[in-house]
Image 1 (cartoon, helix red, strand yellow):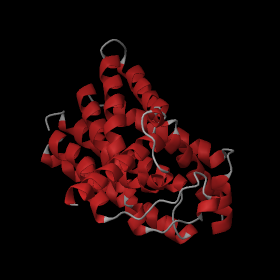
Image 2 (spheres, rainbow, N blue to C red):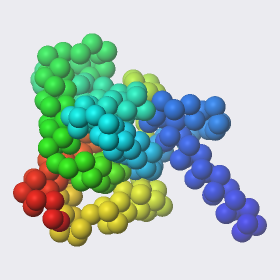
Image 3 (spheres, rainbow, N blue to C red):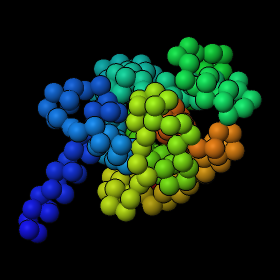
Image 4 (cartoon, rainbow, N blue to C red):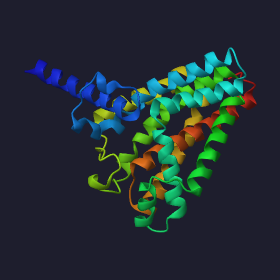
Length: 266
């Protein structure tokens, strides 16, 4: 009986992990894994695990491209590599977030704007500002430290972003959701799994003096979730994508300041 319980638990865990990979990437994992619809309600709880795929790809492209071409071009290719893997899922959310919160004056209007597939002025300006800062933070420090920063920031900020279900309720209902999925609130076991995948790169790859940089995405998390609570009373899928990217960007900004001013002797 105990063996069967463990076996069922392993199947559920594998289905949850597979659902997260299918949902958050454009790699055809769906050809390999047949996942019940119910598991897609857990995908955000295992978001940090996906970072262990997207971060090494992005860092690997940056490292090898920098061996044969100017570093700035390598940074652009690295950014594009993650866009191709994720299908620009998070960037779409960031644009909708800026459009909704920038142009909406009420909860109903904000939600309606975010659901609109057309991009507006705030979305365009938001994406331009985001990519300018992302490119600069990656390109102005040595390639080694840029790669380490990517390997740490991606899973860490996906872990931080996944905690949104502990802070806020979903602002829509399942029928009006873009993805037709309402995420389950994170339980203890998914939290532990996500914490391990999110925090381990930080602990293993960076000197302890740099760990303080992780405070910045935490502050951004609390600031943005406060804004969401006050504006729309909860979160949406677009809010999750924006939250991850802005938390990650804040980490890169702090990380770049530390590396740039330390002469890379950290």
